[in-house]
Length: 113
Ligand code: AMP
Ligand code: ZN
Image: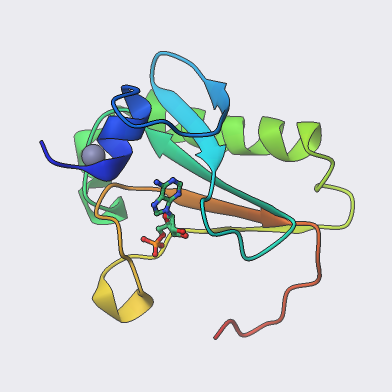
């Protein structure tokens, strides 16, 4: 499949990885919008959270647990951080492989833009 994030996960394309296990990869966003801007992805390709039923509950929970662990390791949990999964064109999803932005290290406004 011609998918950028699949290629980063299987190392066909170089990514700046901060975590990986058999099912999940976390890497630095190439165009960071915060001092800490990571992307957490499942290795298995699904296009968005709208296909989450294809995953075992264990994997879905595993992604959230990894996000929590990485936030602690990156020291962004104290001041607060944001997790975002843009879904569909209206939300600005540009890469059609499920990914969770992990954003930290600055103040975030609400509502988002
Ligand atoms: P989204 O717009 O929510 O689909 O997010 C896609 C994100 O992928 C954007 O924040 C991009 O900066 C990021 N991105 C695109 N190409 C790469 C790459 N080669 N390595 C790391 N991040 C990337
Ligand atoms: Zn993919």
